[in-house]
Each structure stands twice: as C-alpha cells, then as structure tokens.
Length: 177
Image 1 (spheres, one colour):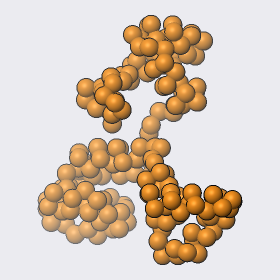
Image 2 (tube, one colour):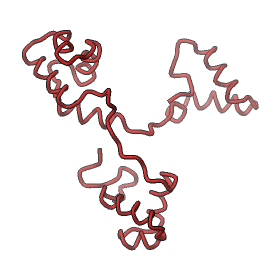
Image 3 (cartoon, one colour):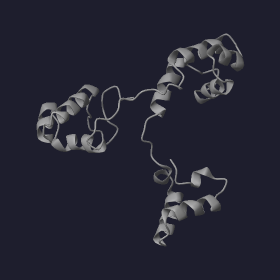
C-alpha cells in the first residue's frame, strides 16, 4: 500500500506514482535511455536507474492476492458473525472455511471486540509485501554467530547445520526469512 501522498519511505524523497512507474516501464520497453525517461518523468536518470535495477530491468509482476486469502466479503461476513454473536465454528461453516482460519483472522486483527473487516483486509495486503528482510539482516546475534563461523572458513551449509544442532528449539536462530 502506497503512502497517500505518494512519498517513498526512504530518505523522504518523492517517489514515482503508479502511473509514472507504468510510463517508466513502457518507455524502457521502447528502449528509451535513462536520460530520456528521466526527462519525461521529471526525475534524475539515477532515480530511474534505481527503479530499473531494483527489478533487474524487468517489469515487476502486478501484485495479486492469493486465491486462498480471505476476501473482503468473507471478512465482512466474519464481522457480521461477531456482531450477531455467532461462534467461530458457525462463522467458519457459513464461509466454508476451517474454524482455525477464522479464529486466526479475528485474533490477528485485534480480537472480536475490535475486529473491522476493511481494516483487516487492508492490513493483510500490507503484510504480504515481498521481499521481506531476511532473518539474518534483522538479527544482530545471528549475524555475529554466522560471521564468526564464516571467518573460520566454514561453508554456509555447515553454519546452517550447526545452528540447527546448537539451537534446536529456536527457529529464530536459523538463516531463513
């Protein structure tokens, strides 16, 4: 979900709107230079290069919701079920979903007293953004351990195996995202 003013979160610089990005990719496809694209969009060629390189020079696929994700209509049905004091199992049966799916949805979005379908739908969209930072990038402890093993010339596969043995009950100590 993009900021309402079209401002990117990095360093406070104005980003490109969806229409500008579409125009950028169309011009790139027509083999226009970075300078030509930049002039057309009122941006520096370096900014254009940043957008292109972050996607490997390929047009990024359009984001779509998973076919398994709850729809807005299903979330509204959950909200109505909560309002009419239906049980989670009753709501799930109406939706043709597992009770655990409905239960997780309600608890993930504030519980029965604060659940709002539209907010849950919007939050779910934001939380499915990719790529997400990998665990190694977000855990200083894991970084130190991995760096020390790599400094000893261990192979990455050896480090991964060692972590699994050393921290069997701590999934946070794995080099996974």
